[in-house]
Image (cartoon, rainbow, N blue to C red; front, side, top):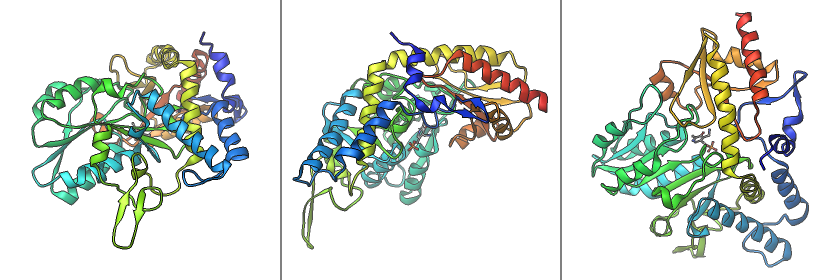
Length: 404
Ligand code: PMP
C-alpha cells in the first residue's frame, strides 16, 4: 500500500526547514531528493567496497565491479532492454545525446540531410544537433507544437522524408509536463527508416518505460531525476546499433589491445566508457531504481497526479496565474507566469515561506519564445509531495501577490 507519510520518511532532506519553515520541495524536475536507500548504498560503497572496477583481481575490486555491473543489469531490466550490453553509462542525458551525435550521426550526415527536433526540446536535445549541423552542412528542422503544448503530429507527417537522418524527441517535457506519444512518432518515423532518439530525462520517474515497445533507436536518461545521484545516467540502444558505432572517447577501459600502430576496441558496453567511471554513482543509480521499483512507478505517478490535479485547481483560482502547458495527461509539472511579477522575484519571495520552485527558461529558450515569455515559474512534483504542501505553496503565492 502506498502511504505518502512512509515515503516522506525515506527522504531525510524533506525534514529540514528553510527560513524557519518546513521545506516544501517543488523542484523535482530539476533534481529529485534522494531516499535513504540511495544515500546508504553510496555510503556503504565508500565505507566497504571502494576500489576501481574491471581490471582488479583483489576482493574489493571484484566487489566494486559486481556492484557497478549489478546496477547496469538493474537499469537494463527497468527499461526492458534485451541485455545489459545495450546500456552505456554516461554522465547523464546530456552526455548520452552528445555520444549519439558524435559517434552515430556525425559520419552519416552531409549537406541536404536533416535532423528533426520538436519545439519543446531541452537545450540538451537541440545544441548537440546544431553543432553537427554547423559542422556538416545539414539542416535542423523543428516540429511545431500547439498552444496547449502538444506535438503537431499533422505537421510532423509533412516533415518526414528520406532526408531526415535522426528525429530527437523529449518523452516528458521538463518545462510543460507534456507526455509525448513516442511510440506513435516512432511508427511514423519508421516508414522512412528514421531513427528516433528519446530524451527520457523526465520520463523514468513517472512512466513505465519499455524501450522495446517504444520502438525508438536511442533512449537517454539521468539518475538524478529518478531519485539517484548526479553525474550518472545512461544511453540505451540495440546491440546491433552500438556494435556499428565507433567509440567517441579514447582512453583506458574502452580498449582491447593497444600498440603505437593500432588499437582495438573493447566489447560492449565498455567500448563507450573511456576512463574510470562514476562507480559510486552507478551503485546509487541501481539503488534508486530498486527503490522506485519497490514503491511502484504507477504508485509514484498516481501520487504526482493527485497533487497535480489539486495544484492546478487551486492555482486556477488565482487571477494572476497563467499556466503554460495544458496538455491532457501531462506529468506533475506546472509552469506558470504570475501577472507582471518576474518569476525570479516570485521564487525568491516564496523561498522565504520554505517553498522551493524553479524560475527561468528551464533550458528551453525556444519554447519560452513560442509562448512569448522570457521565463516562467515552475512547480514540479515527486512521489513525496502532498496536497497540504500545495496549500502552503498557494498561500505563499497569495502573500507574494499582496506584496506587489
Ligand atoms: N532533458 C530534459 C527534458 C531535462 O529535464 C534535463 C535536465 N533538466 C536534461 C535533458 C538534461 O539532463 P542532465 O542535465 O541530467 O544531463
